[in-house]
Length: 341
Ligand SMILES: [Zn+2]
Ligand SMILES: [Zn+2]
Image (cartoon, rainbow, N blue to C red; front, top):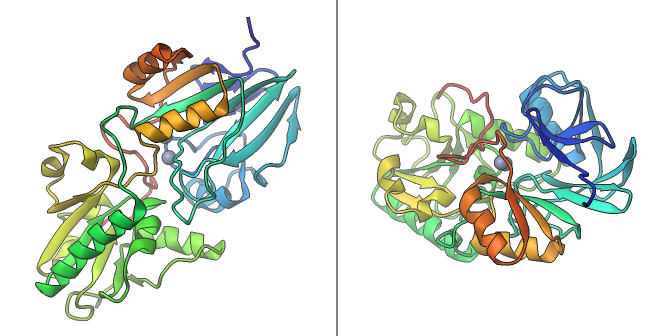
């Protein structure tokens, strides 16, 4: 029986050799954090360890915490465990955490994607014996369009709205998705306006040197008259609220991996849906898992039952792990404290 480098406990993923948890959902003395999304970086832990580029967002969200940082690729000895953080390509600063004990190597990948978004350090394959994977989009129906196609779709929709005298309002998650969309936008069409929740994240990411296009925060006096032909990036919670009245006639869009599902567009009541996700699609999950060389696969949040059955059929020793990472109905990938719309 191979060594259980990581165990699955009611508080979260636990390493007995190093006496630490990874992305725990209950308060623990020592937490290693893969990235700053609300369901992975929770308040209440005694001490935190995360990558240097993930730290500013985590601090912004969790306030005064004891947070130590580590560069990608650097190894650190914690008790009898050797740990290192490697790019997960999910959002800026996101990491897979490699844990080695007595030659047995396990990787907890957190959330990940293989597509290079030009913003996050690209996903790195880490060879291991056991791999803990998400399965948010672990069904063959999920297949993402390439970046160029996506850019053409979003810019086409924006330009058409502008030509009709409408403001384009796109619902996005404040951390990751918003900035990724921003980099695909063609500023020749018009100005890019941002909701406070999106701009707060922009400010943090710009301060750490990430290149983002110029944006205009929506404040008093910023409206359809002052900024014609604009696109507005706002959290989903702002769509359809009185905050939007200033933009006059609008065309609304929504950017999510769930757009690959029929019916979601109607439910979201947006005029247009764009398939864009910070998670791996079906091919991405399979490619990543194969490349690790791992024989044991633990499947967490998402289509766990279907995906682990598929992996078992492919010859892996695969099982489901119950976690409290949120994504049952939506990508739970916003900052928790979004200002009121
Ligand atoms: Zn995430
Ligand atoms: Zn997640």
